[in-house]
Length: 381
Image (cartoon, rainbow, N blue to C red; front, side, top):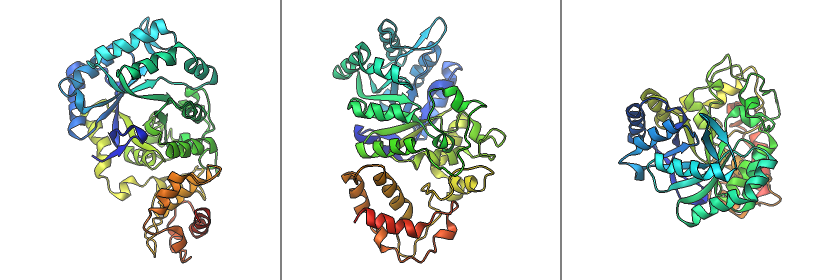
């Protein structure tokens, strides 16, 4: 298993993480699944689910090995009258959070997540009142080490960054969502009525700005919905008309700026092994770009997705990294010092391009790479 640093938190998290919401079997079944994940190096788990059975299962699954796990626990996810409720009412928030600590058999969470903010009204209510005061007090008391937030909307993520409170985020990342205009309705993103027909427009500009800002500010991302609710794994449901594999979806998410870990739901040992096989997959098995480029419908024409098909460069330029740093820089009013530092640390930079164009026929999306090298050299000059 490979590990990445989660932004400025300093936490080292596994590239493949664990989304815990599907563990509805027995405690022994859950423990078997979690133990296999731990054996394969998975060390981060999210528990947004408030179902008491799931929480107790996860606690039992970590028993004796709690220190091996980085836990994302949530403020505002409540089990009420036998169902999940998202709330900011403190009379419900406090006992639900304390219940999560107790059932997960823990005295603290490494990551305390402000649960699921997707609209302005909820954002304002959360960050201007007793809810955020309670979260801050938990950090001050050492009950949580870092404050995070979960959202599906880049606009809310950008607002959270500006508070100076949120240190990392759980965000939905996959190639379909990246093309979609932002919406407050999660069902719209995952349902049959989802509109992915942004052909030719590439990654939504607000999402691109969100990724760039997270990278610049050191706001690490963990990923939810990497398979778009399973739609990307089925050609009949995929908006692209072709099926991607779990490894391809995970790889896409991990090539986005600021992403440290992809939290995949594991409902069986077999699924754990399938998803963790990402770590030993061949370049061909990780190749999402060729699949998307040959799909009946995609919107990535002319846009670099950092897939690496352009390699090898005749003079040794790491083209995907140059393009990623250039894209990050162009999202800001001026080139951020951190991005410039990463660019200048490259062994061979864009100004070494000899304009041979040998890379361009290999690009699945028809990117004019030589022109982009000229632009990048000028940008960072």
